[in-house]
Image 1 (cartoon, rainbow, N blue to C red):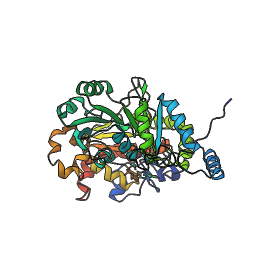
Image 2 (cartoon, protein in one colour):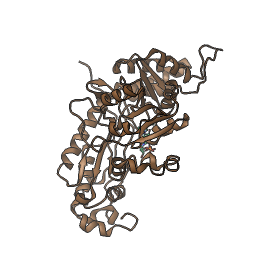
Image 3 (tube, rainbow, N blue to C red):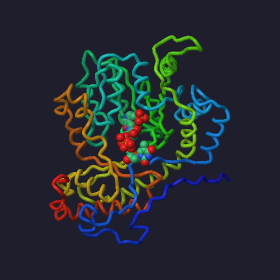
Image 4 (cartoon, rainbow, N blue to C red):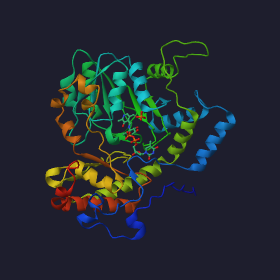
Length: 423
Ligand code: T4K
C-alpha cells in the first residue's frame, strides 16, 4: 500500500490553545482593547504550503550535480509535462511568474487597443495590459460570485476593444460560456488570468482549457507554488510557438533571433519546488477544504458575516477563505473587524481594496470609473480574506471564529471604544 506522505505543517503557537487560556468572552479580552493577543506568531493569509522537503532536496541536489540551472532544463520540462497532463491541455509553458506570463500571452495574442478586465482583481492583471501598451477597461463583477459580469462587459465593448481578460477570482471559475459567446459575437480574443485557480474546474472542464490561453501563478502564496513562477496553457499550436519564442528573447536556435522577446523563463530551482508542490497538491486541497468547512460551520449564524461558498458541483482548491462583512447587520465595518483581528496577530487581508480603478495610474486616467462599478465599489469595502492553508490548525480556526463572533455580538460596546483611526 502506498504510504501517505505527511504534510509539512509549520507550528504556530496560538496562546489560547497552548496555555489553555479560555476563549475570549468579553470586549476587554480583545487585544485592541488591551487584552493579550490570541496568537504569539502572526497568522498570515498566504503562508506558503511546503510539500515533501526530502523530495525537494533530492531534486535540488540533482540540479546541482547536473549544473543545469535554467534555460529549458529537465526539471522545467518535467513540470510542464505533468501540468499539461493534469490539466488536459496540449501546451503548458512555464514562466518566471504570472505577471510576466500575462504580458507574454497578451503579446503573443497580438492584442492592441483596449482589453476589458475586472477592476476587482490583483493589480497585476491590469498592469500587465498597461505594460504591454494596451488600455485596460474596467468592467464590474457579479456581486455574488465576485467574477466578471458579462452584462457589464458587453456595455463596454467598442471599436477599440481587442479582447477580454477574465479572472477566475478566488479560484472560482465563472460563466465562461457567456463570455465566450460574447467574444465570438464581437470577434474578440478571450483569455484568462487563473492566478488563483489551479486545480479548479468549470462545468467539469479544468481551468486552463478555456479561451485562447490561461495564465496561472505559482507564487509562494498560491496553493501550488514554485517559489515564484507561473504557466501559460493553450490548445493552440501557433500561439504556443509564439509564447516559446517570446519567453526566451525570441531565440529560435543558438544564434537565430526571429522575434522580439523577453526573459520569462522559469528556473530549475523553481521547477524543483513546483514539482514537489504538485506531488502534495491533493493534500493541500484536503487541508483547505477542511479549513473552509470549519470556518463555514463556525461562522454560519453570525449576522452580517457571509462566507463565500464554492460550487459543490465543481472541483475547487478552496485556497481563499473570503468573507463579506455587512456593517449594518454585523454592527461593525469590515475595516473595524480587520483592525480587531490584526491586533490579535490574525493578519487578514483586504483583497482587492481599493480596486484597480482607484490605484495609479488608472485612477488618474479613469477618474470616474467607479460610477460604472457599483458591485466592485461595494466589495472592495466589504471583503476580508482569512488565513488558511497547511500552516493553519483547526484550533486556530475556532479561535478566529470566536473572536469574529465576540466582535460582532458585542459591537455596540466595542465600536465606540475603538480609536478614531480604526473607526
Ligand atoms: N493575477 C491575480 C489575480 C493575482 O492574484 C496575482 C497575484 C497575479 C495575477 C500575479 O501573480 P504573480 O506575478 O505574483 O505570480 C500576494 C502575492 O504576492 C501575489 O502573487 C498574489 N496575486 C496576491 C493575491 O497576494 P501581496 O502583496 O499580498 O503579498 P505579501 O508579500 O503581502 O504576501 C501575503 C502574505 O503571505 C504575507 O502577509 C506573508 C505571507 N508570506 C508571503 C510570502 C511571499 C509568507 O508567509 N511567505 C512568503 O514567502 O501579494
